[in-house]
Length: 284
Length: 227
Image (tube, rainbow over all chains, first blue to last red):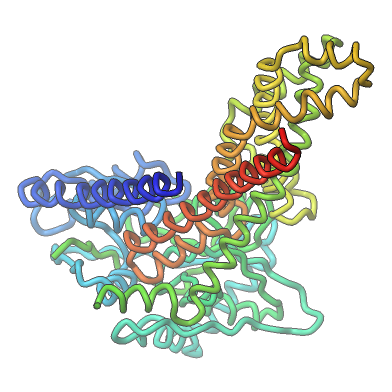
């Protein structure tokens, strides 16, 4: 009876291994010849995929060599899925932020940034709040301006983004502990290092978290962090279960899409605290 | 060796293993409480489903149809971000409620099919022998029911445990959430998710092991009684 069970388990493991290895092996051959593979993009929260397809098509015309791209995109809910798709050869490139690409390449030698030349697009990083929190949003906007002026944002970026050398573990973020102050509930996903990640000890960290800790400290509030699946962020905000989530907005000067194209009804977005260029990562 | 070093760095350093354990603990806790709620509620629903009073039967049928036919993630989202958004219940409580409700529908059906497989004559025989209604249930129906249910019930438990992997949607950090966070931070999703799968597999086999132990215990009991 027991031996049967062990054998069963062993067989299951072997099968699993074969399936996993099979997927990787089979796709490798295809990648080299297939130029029409789609490009992976992280799904935006509210704008439809059709809207983004249109936007991406226009954006590509700005690159130097037209026809260089397949006009086909696949949208992923999180970076893990997109990275696995790239590994398996399901997509030829993934579109992500420079800071994220650097972080990825430092930890996984499989990948490299591919240079397309031409126009470089950038996205802005903001906080999103429920529309009822307009007072807090105004305070945040003010403090973000201050932090830009006094160099705090730059210093934080140095510590949490550019300071990460040789795959070092990102530093922890100290959350404000103010006696008797109100609490802001923040939903983090841990899905976009080095901006939003969770440390081995389970604590949220990353540049965006550090900025938010400083923002709350300056407006005199404590922070409570909850970890949430990226797909549930909009529901969490609009239902009032969390007060703030990190948001990426298309800059208004992009010319293709209005800056708030992705912002759902009932949600307001602060001024950007960071801008990062979009790069394409591919397999070596 | 490089691979082992990578594993050591990802899963052991800086308390990563403790975070994994905490995630697994959250998964087990939600599973256990949902199972308790689901089983008790399921028995009640099954009772209604078999009731002679027609409206009760119909209500139970509707309840089972609704909950068994809809994805539990939708129910969870609706409860947490909709119906119970204004309340102060902990996300864990709402998750236990959602998974408990869903499980109850499955348990109710499971109980009903098991009951229908039992010969009615035995209860009648017990009653004519002077057993009370309760005694007939306790000594004639229940032991057979448990034996009939067990194989399917253990699948229900394991299924339930796997379904709880979506509680990350309602701000709970369970095993899946920890695994995803870890995969993102280390940028090694293939490896980390494989290990996550292995942990779920181990937990599933722990459940099967418990059921196998209870079978063994039952056999011993019987041998002791000289049956």
